[in-house]
Image (tube, rainbow, N blue to C red; front, side, top):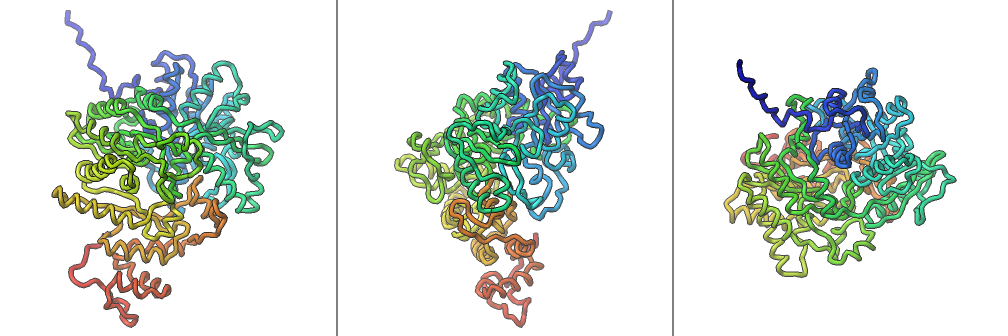
Length: 635
């Protein structure tokens, strides 16, 4: 009798039991007859700590709950994706995904994008506009008695009245536009765990009113928590943009405080209540989130199809959450908070070792980073001062004297990861705040360590190109952006060039810039072109300002005034105004030259024509001014 051969081991990349279930068959494989929570996501399911649905799913799983994920459900057919798992015992969770759907779908010119980085194959069209609204409405139609809880970036940043650039109008809290019972904003592990516990204990969703980082509808007659700040009603904001600007100042200040106040806004016949954020996570709490049993892989259902967003981060390690930069155009602090919550070195090393065991790892960690790569482990010298602080930025208009910008803990992590035998090199792919590493520290030892950080960053952790974000060259535009003077970028460029010379390297410094930001005139962009030409930059990483919900810059764009001063600020609004600014990024393109020269004539800036195209230019010879000598190749 022939001996039985042992079954071939399952490749862990395709072992369905290692992932949260996504189909009825996978639920059955677990032996489950009922689910506790079902999550619907606008993104593909990637079981990785950079993907929100995976984090929430694994967090609930760690509580002993039976959790499934339905990624990118079809909302246009007979809704079988919404029916296939039945109804859960506790609640449905709904998220548009890791990006606001309108940013995901449309360019700054409101043109439809033709790809989606969070979909297999980069295919466009796998999610609707405003999935938070669409998914919630479908689930409430099918299962009216099951609580629906919305979360994710789209819901988080639309939690109160906000300007929607794509519809060009003020919209109310997304909770007023969709049928979800509750909204969780920010990083939701603590809130979703508390809500799940209370639903398990028998509480009704409508009775859970005091969980931090939650948003709910109240009847106007219901009492508000003590200390609640009542914002101008939505209707009043529609009638008077200055009232919306005044509201936003409260929204930003309270979201950046260590212990903020509740906010309430009358919207239609309901009052939207926003509970304050949880305190910043402790190191132990952050470790617990990142140490959950992620496979770090896309679900096997995708059969090896590439997911562009995953490819970018598959060999990366996130070391902390939060950002205290406070940039006017950025939403990180509105979602993750201003205070930094850092992982332990041991937790980071555990994940780095996991990365080295991946089947396609070649020895290179693509990023040891975070929202701002070099804020790891940083906080105030005196935390009691931080607890009283209402500044939206610890770096603007000047670095806070209470900020401890010691980069030594970060260097220790870099050294520990680089010491792993499987790691040939680790790169820093996240944005670096060079103003943070260049800010003086009262301790000379720390100053030397920060200088060493800049040297090691440039010499050891750059994959040929270091990307930084000065954003503009004009000081008055940078003031609106809450960014440091461009002179500081010049100082950093000197350090970069010197280290490259001393180390025998030939690396590039790639600056990011934004056009059409509030406060920026076409003349500012013309001067940006001349300044960057002088520095021998041919700009690549550029973008036109896109107003996104929950930023100071967007409020200025919509209201025309700064929320903190109510003073008017210039805004480029029309397509022609935006194009006139954007063209200066590409002054070196021959096709752009005639229209750039025409713009500079209108500004009476012949001096800039000379700086860009040489002194041979004359009005009678519009083609003159072409750079002499060898031409640079066109992009």
